[in-house]
Image 1 (cartoon, rainbow, N blue to C red):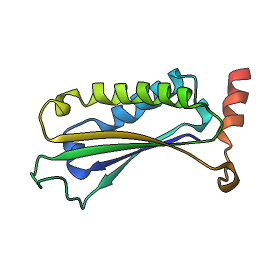
Image 2: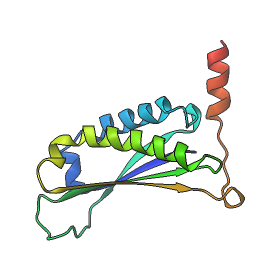
Image 3: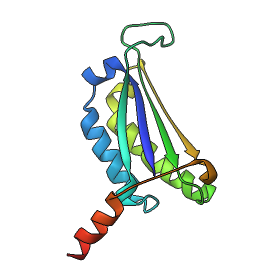
Image 4: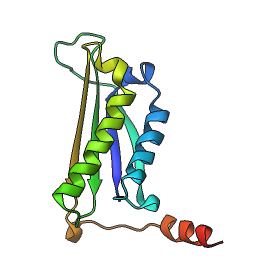
Length: 131
C-alpha cells in the first residue's frame, strides 16, 4: 500500500503524457512523507466505453483513487490528498482550461482485517540502501 489508480477516458491518452503523470504523482506521494517508497504503486486504467456528460467527443476525465492502509489521521490524509491533487491539476492545467475535462481524487482507507499483502520490494530496497 498505497495504490493510486487513475481511471481515465481512453481519449485522454492522446491529450496527456500519462507515463509522466504516473511518475510525477509517485514522486509527490513520496515527498509527502506519508507513504512508504516500497509500497507506492501508481497506474492508469483506460476506460474504452464511457458516457461523459453531454457525450461531446472532446469530453475526457481522470478519476484518481488512492487506497491506503489504516492508521493515518484525517489531517494527514487531507494534506497528502491536497498535494497529489495539486500535482494532478498542474499536469492537466491545459485540459482544465478547455471546458471538456473532469478531474477527481478520492482516498479510501482499507480495513486491516480485510486487507492482505505480500511485498518483497520493501526488503530489497532496504538491502540496497544499506549497501
